[in-house]
Amino acid sequence: MLYNTYVHVKKQAKSTIFLEIVLIWRCFSVNVCALSDFQAGIPVHIDNVVEKDIERGRAHFQIDTCAPHIGAVGQMLRLAEQEHGIILAPQIEFLPFHGQSPVRTCTLNQGWLAVAMGIAKNRVPNCRIHLFYVDLKMQDLEMLAHKLYGKMQEVYNYYEVHLEFNEFRKRIRRGMDACGKLRREAADFAAAGAKYSLNTGNDIALVIGREYILNPGVYDSHVGRLLRDKGLAGIPAYLLDIEYDPAYNYIYWRNAHQIATVAAAAAKGGVHQIVRHSGLKELFREREEGGKRVLPLVQVSTFLCGPDSVTNPLVEELAACRTNKAA
Image (cartoon, rainbow, N blue to C red; front, side, top):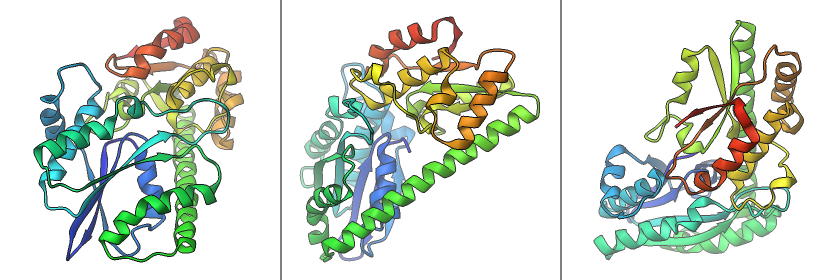
């Protein structure tokens, strides 16, 4: 779900189209590409950021910034230098949310894709990059389909593909349904793993932090390995489908709002009250109400992350002395 991810859509005559997704944007690639079959018969291949992308991207920054930002630049350079048709770069402005929070993405503040595109075009002036903005906060599927349909026409025109809007809308619906199914299956898997850990005499820990440092890959914090050494099964908070606490609607970023909500609930022994997934809700209820000690809460942070630098003091206050930190 997390990393800088490009989807290569290949065609014999016109080579390759790349779709870049950063952090949560991989869910977007699943929605719009692989699962919604937006490519209309054009084969898709996914390319992830690699260590060399980060090493190369670092040379273009004279200020501190997060590793995924650096990696996005290196990856865009690598792909721009390869033979390609179009590099499609959707910059997500808002993430899915039910409520009144701003739910911005942190990458928008950095001009993430615009920076990567500018550097790539400076190096490869004739590369073809299609940058556009996407709002996933809107709940109206019809409106979302209309927005995306117009922005995808440059791609379809280039590959000489004609797709009627009604068919495009159906594909977006299938993609959204499949993404929801994927998230439910991930939650089912987490619940089963946590239940097994408890049944075998071990404990569980709720891990809060930015997604990219909680997943296997080039940005991995390896917190899972540390927890296993202590007999704990870690449950990443980003897997939780929760009711967001309106007390933190003022927080600018969606993910930071989620972290604050989970930290506040854990401090009061009320994680089970905000979780929607029935299996995880029951598991947390049993653990919080029947456990001999409070539910372990682990915060994983990086000082180079903009949202973390702003929200860490709030999280520390909410979690008080109960938080074990890994950085």
